[in-house]
Length: 311
Image 1: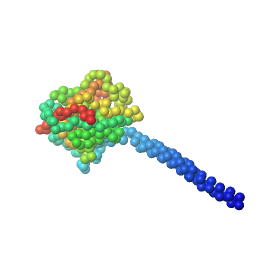
Image 2: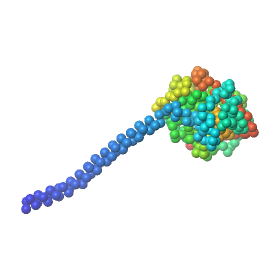
Image 3: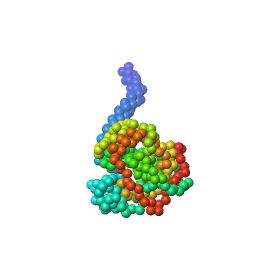
Image 4: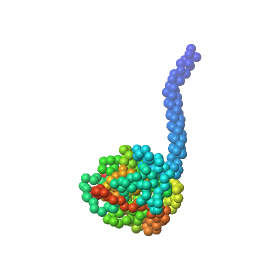
């Protein structure tokens, strides 16, 4: 009888401790699962880092000379692979349209860029540009024609209701566009692409003044030949914008072959600064890489009347 009572008590004790035992076990499994997930995430992250290594081949995919191939239906595009162009001499701008059949627009196009921004029409229907830019890691490439920063995905521009993704930005010395006939020492182009393949390029002029903060950080690392430079140091892209975001707007083209006439040009009225020394240093790397001015051929340049969209 005593043995039966002991067995009953033991059974009751076991039943009493069972929920606690299950709870501990579940918690233990939960911890192991979280640990496993963390390990998997770390492995994925490591794999992504390896896959997105900033090689020269990867860097050049969004250079203007290659970007147009992704956006064109021209079946002769591949025939231009390996064709060389320069900014002077036999392969210079006057001959770009002759160097390759798919580059014919460089010589025959009627909506070419850059242009002189002189007579403009003030257009109240143009909305303020909505720069939804964020931070990016530092990936710099000398693509053989300019210094180019490739940016991480996520930065967008909303221009008059249309959304564009920022791909890269690069520099020209001297400025390609002129304002009332005046060249600026530098012009930077922020190249964006929309879902339909159309491009929006934001042009910003540099004037000589105080040292540029981005150049302070990275000018010493700009490759002087076709190479790349990477750094985990981040760049807040919105800090690269001038205070005045009013802009000139016209339909034009890429300013490098294939001179595709698919660009919504947004040239900001506001300017940014760089020191004389910085401008001179960059000049020695990119060697006067500005395409000559092109004819408007009846195109009208509009000017917005709004400013920075702070929302």
